[in-house]
Amino acid sequence: MTKGGDDKWKASLSELAYKVCRLGHTEPAYSGALLHNHRCGFYHCICCNQRLFDSNTKFDSGCGWPSFDAAIEGTVRYVADQSYGMVRTEIRCLQCDSHLGHVFDDGPTNTGQRYCVNSVSMQFEATSSSDE
Image (cartoon, rainbow, N blue to C red):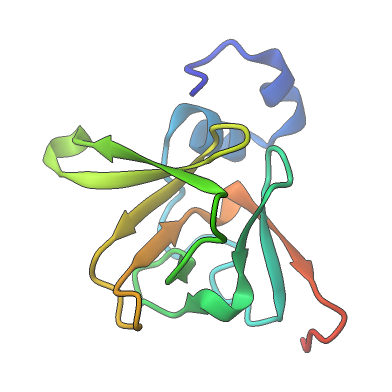
């Protein structure tokens, strides 16, 4: 993951998106534009446009960030994260190594997973059958 000085990413991302995606920061809870998005479609990496999550896997976890119970297979990689005195699993885009968020084993759905993802790390593409 880029730790700074990457002019390409700084030029193409908002300041917050750069800090989250390239430096591993977290957007403030309940601030993300995609938190309450209920349309049908796909969530893509803001950095490389890799398709990451299907809207069918999104659920309201009440945690303040968009939550999904599964990633599209082969699109994310998992990294042990012991920062801030916690033991977590970080998720990164497999294609461009962008920090997306974390996955936890406390999801209420059949997978038992809760992918807690920063809105700013994604862009949404509605499908033609999407309702607003």
